[in-house]
Length: 342
Image (cartoon, rainbow, N blue to C red; front, side, top):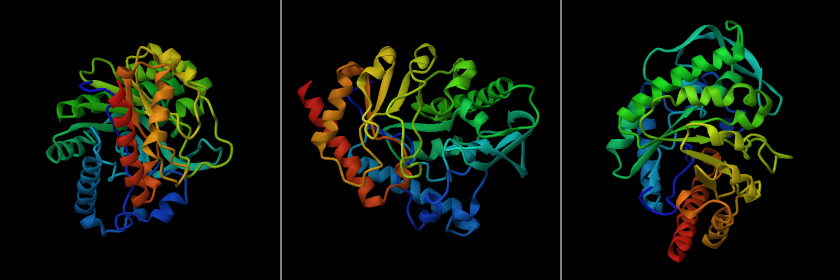
């Protein structure tokens, strides 16, 4: 890291109403198969509209003062489905069913052959992001463990075998993303928290296969599920976190704001950089910079300041745009308050 307490997003940014039907997007669980009906522009104008929305997301991050910029994930109906549905071995015409993390059945990719990456999926996304900002950039891909949990296995002898093939596909993608100009590549693994027993069996193995011989800074995001969608009793602590200490990943991204996470939970990860969630996306109230600063200082009781990256909790795509920008500004200003005292 070149500076203390750099700021970034987890991945997504508030999606504009002119691009996607926000009510329909938020009124359902994140799609695992394609959900083209959510997009507002006609198919032959969709890519151009997504490009424009990406430029907007980059510009707003820069205006707010974000240090490590993402593309806002403006081309995705969910964090995982764009990549997961681009792989060989998946029958897209006849989806399967799997339970989501709240226990509801959801249409998912049905795996009918060996999972392989046909071609790069997000290289153009990185190249576009690189062309449109001179700041450090990060791109996200879904993790192999999570994609395994979000699929119906009609081919493999075991889930672990399927996860390792997903991991090989992710590994190929990550290498191409670094070659295309990414500074940081993050894998999103929310299901490590949702399915901790299975994660203990083969989660770390799949992660390390995904990151094998990768040259660049890598991050891994683990969370409690979108606060905008999963209401009620959300966990206040992680069931699978310390297990990441022994993996190849450089940074671990955690939600700490909404769950009011006990900083002691971060202790096993002291050897990693920690992306600390400092913005509560369940609460429409805009944090003051002082609240953000206090959340950063809480994390600093356990994690050294030079190993903290400041971020929101996850799910910015669902937040109204005016609130999202104000929260992002507060996060940057809160980080600056703490930085000034170090």
